[in-house]
Image 1: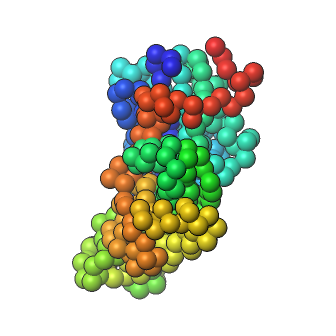
Image 2: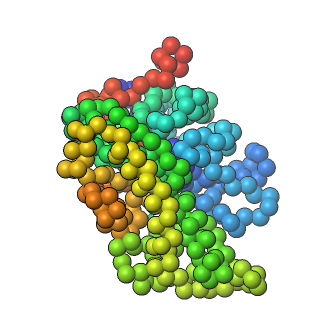
Image 3: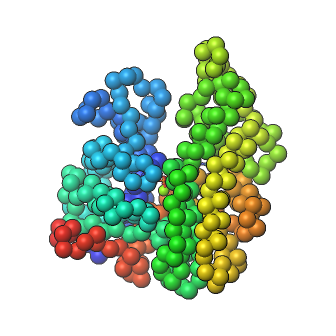
Length: 342
Ligand SMILES: Nc1ncnc2c1ncn2[C@@H]1O[C@H](COP(=O)(O)OP(=O)(O)OP(=O)(O)O)[C@@H](O)[C@H]1O
Ligand SMILES: [Mg+2]
């Protein structure tokens, strides 16, 4: 493979980049803050800090939605900024080759857009290939995808959850469900407003979710939340209980588990037997949701493995595609004739 090689997971919430033989070299929010069209103010964590606080003249964009590029120009600006920031930090991507992880359940045009973004960026890449996200994810979770053993892997991200059955090095079934961490945050926002007449911002909702949810607890833990009183419009502080947040999050979680059940119903019996023995593997940063394993086991009767590296499992898996020649074939050109620059 090429000398300088990077693997990219363009997530709705965070972009993760793996530098061959060096590991994760970039992991930041997929956010760009700009004034007008051209003046970029901040990207990544710095831009995310501004969400909900920015003045009117600053636009904050999340150019990836539901796992695909929703705003081409903003995405191109974001990748250019990332390349510049990394170059400043001593990691120059210019002229390198790339492997991009793409969701399975999206159109070829959507897959090609990832290609086009890198191709038209200031990086001027040598070569771009794609790998199916569920395969990279499974490799990143340490699953040996080539053996005849079937595995069920559920990646809970921000906008989406990708549910995939993998066997003999290929994807037997894959389903992209439009429910993930953002829906958990929205459920928390709605519950806090209903119970406390308190309107909270999206970042507060996320902090409450991460800090308080524990589906295996008695729900007695509490956390202070600040927001605006729905009736008076005045700033207020309220004590939020884990019980409230657990029950709010359970609703969107059930949507994901319903999708998991519908996939389980469609898999061949031999693979069902493997999954019964090995359990379901959960990845994606949302799989760190407190008490998830116990909750899913109770609901499905199946064993659950939570990937310890869930937030970066797809990019880590791209690392294995780059570094282990057994998996090199998983990096494929979009179209050999037209899309390779070398
Ligand atoms: N400890 C945690 N507990 C619960 N949720 C968490 C935790 N840490 C991060 N999250 C949530 O994980 C989500 C981001 O996950 P991830 O980085 O896997 O998404 P993504 O890959 O960018 O999105 P997608 O796969 O949908 O395109 C966010 O909604 C965030 O709030
Ligand atoms: Mg993801």
